[in-house]
Structure formats: structure tokens, C-alpha cells
Length: 125
Image 1 (cartoon, one colour):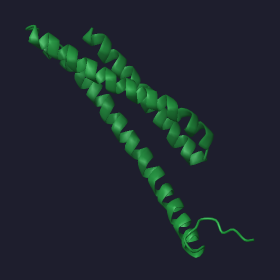
Image 2 (image 1 turned 120 degrees about the horizontal axis):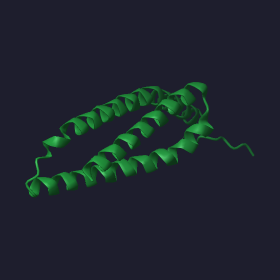
Image 3 (image 1 turned 90 degrees about the horizontal axis):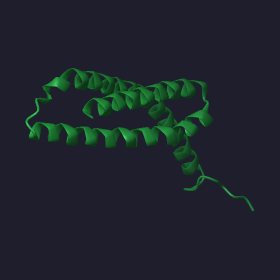
């Protein structure tokens, strides 16, 4: 059971990793439609990752409580951890691309708002 959970965690991690790499490419190409379409999928994958992680912890705890040496899973868990660290790293790369753009848009909107007396859109009658 534990090996299956670890395998599924690795698969979900790789799917998220691939999605984020595609996001980076789409940000560079300003392909916003693909980014939006992938968001829902990524949210589901993140939920799945979270629930599988909880299930893995429960199963490891159960085996430990039953006197089973859980160190037999060490290599698989280490490999999973490596994949998660890579996911964290690539997600940070995406954030470093997206956050400055977000800040630039915020600055533009703030400037327009300030010039229009506190409103984003000036209505002329």
C-alpha cells in the first residue's frame, strides 16, 4: 500500500512539474488562455498531492505502530522528496517571472487611479 501511495505521489509531483514548466513557457509567450485552462488542473493535482501525503503519513504511522521497520521505504521517500524539492524550485522560478509582471500592472493601475482622482475609470458625461 505504501509503495503505491509513493508511486502516485511521484506521478502527481511530475504532472505538477510539467504543468509549471508549461506555465513558464506560456507566460513568456503571453499565452494567457492556456495558463487559465491549466489552473484548475493544477489545483486538483495540488489537492491530490496533499491528500496522498496525509494518507502516506497515516500508513507509515500504522506500520510503525505494528512494529514494521519503515526504513525499508527510505529510498522511495528520499526520491519522492527530491521530486518535491524540484517542484518547489520550478514553482519559485514561475513566481519570479509572474510576480514582477503583477507588480508592474499594479503600479500602472495605481498611477491611473491617482490621475483619475481615486477611480480607475474616468466617466465623462
